[in-house]
Every structure is written in structure tokens, then in C-alpha cells.
Amino acid sequence: MILYTLIVRSKDGLALSASTDFNDEGLRDVKESKKYLKFLAKKTLQFPDRCILHTGTHTVYLLTALGVSYLALCDSSYPTVLALSFLNELMKEFLGKYQAFAVNQARRPYTFIDFNNVIHSARQRYNKPQSLSTRINLAELSEEIRLRPPHIISLAEVQPLNGFHSINVSKATVGPPLKLERISWFGSGMILIAVLLTIIDVLRAEASSNYGFDDLDGPGAAFHSIIFAIESVVRLFQVAIYLQGSKKYHKYMWVCLAILILSGLSVYDLRDRWQNGLRFFVTGALVYLTVQRKHEMRLPDYNV
Image (cartoon, rainbow, N blue to C red):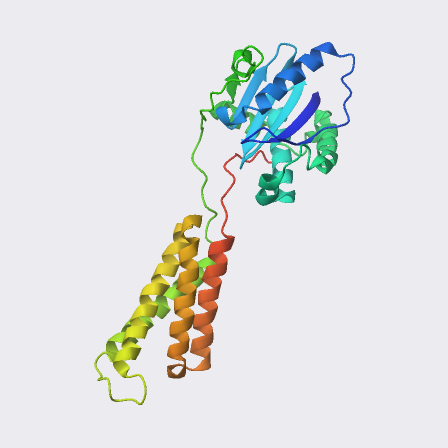
């Protein structure tokens, strides 16, 4: 059975939540195993995202995702596939309930202790495996474990040396790096429209360049040609930022937004309201999509 669960922030081992419905008073072997679990909780960055630590009478399972580590202390006879599935379910619930910003801003231990209600409910179900048979495909889970077995941690790797934790902070990584979420059908539509608008602006820039500076009152056709050319280049750059998705380029997205608004206003009278509205909408939509685009979770889906 699952005896104890602990959720920590990976970078520093700060406890975020834990199960509070298990009393280990008088259970010496459980206390000893919990000690190793807490040692491991402070070193999660040194290990791959899925690990197992055998303490003798118990087994500790570790699952790490997006800066948060989930640990479970189980009887040594408890099935590995169910233990990892349990942690995977907690991971999904925790990431769905709490934002990464809130986790990073936590300063006190057990800031999210209210999550113990979720832990308690999941533990009750997983401690009665027969009730899970209709919800979990054990064959698929076992195949996933066989293809990508968890890393085995030795007690020596987590036990402090002379009462002090090792200062070795090298990080092991397993599997591919985090990937961005796939572009939605709406995002694909905005990209297509943006490219079409870019082609139109290039054609208008070429057409306007054939006129002189003095054929219109105020800014001449050559000036409009320059504005159209700038719009086409900046709009393509905006699309490239969205496709690339890195947050370090987000500041350039705001620069693109400002340029496209100013250039759009400067040639506002040369387009009808529908053309102007479409351009402003596509510009704003790409900014929103870029800011909202997130990373996919790297961990496998256990179909829980």
C-alpha cells in the first residue's frame, strides 16, 4: 500500500504539500524509510524524472515534472506500475490546480497543504487496486515501464555524508527536452492570414514605389511604399516569433505590435474599415497566441 506522499519544489526541496492522514508513531521501519524519502526530496534535481529507491522494507518512488517533484513511500510489494501511475495522477492534478508562478513564489513549507485532500482521495483508490481495474490499462502501463524503466537510486546516493548533504548538484536528464504545445487550428489560421496580408503589402509597396513623391497631398506614394514594406517585414517577423515560441523573444513581439499599429494608422485612409480591422485583429491575435503558448508536459501519459 501507499504509506506516505510528499510534494516538493525541485530546485530547493521546499515541501509544498504532503499526506496528513497517516500516523507512523511506533512504526520504526516506516520512520526510517521516511527519513530516506526526505533526504531524496532535497536532491531531486540530481536524478532523472522517474526513479526508485529501495530502503529494504519499503520503496520510495520519485516523479519530477516542470519544477515539482512527487514522492511516495510504499510497501516493497506494492506494484511499481501503480505507484508511478499514482504519482502521475497527482502531478496532473497539482499542475492543473496551481500555477508555476505560485510554486516559485512559495516561501513557507507546506504552502499548498490543502492539496492533501487530493492526495488522500487518490491514496484511498490506489490502496484498493481492484477498484482501479476498470480505469487503468495495466498492459499499456507495464509496457511503458518496460520500455523506459525508472532509474534505480542507491541509499548511498541520498544519505548525507557525516550528517551533511552532498554539495554535488549535477543534474541528470532523461528523455527529450520540453517541447512547445502544438499550434492550434486558430493559430494556423492566423499564420496563413498574416502571410497573405504580407504578400498584399509587398505588392502594394511595389506598386506605390512606381509613383513619385508629389502626386498626393501630404505624404507621397513613395512614403506609403516604405510603410507597406515595413509592415510586410515586421508581420513576417511576428509570425517567426510565434513559431519559435521562446520567451526571450517575447519583448520583440511587443515591438512588432507597436510598429504595426503605428504603420497601420499612418496608412489607415488607404484601406477600408474591414481591411484595417482584419490587420489589427491578426496582429493582436498573434501577440495573444505567442504569450499564451506553453510547453507540453514531457512525462508519459499513464491513462489514469
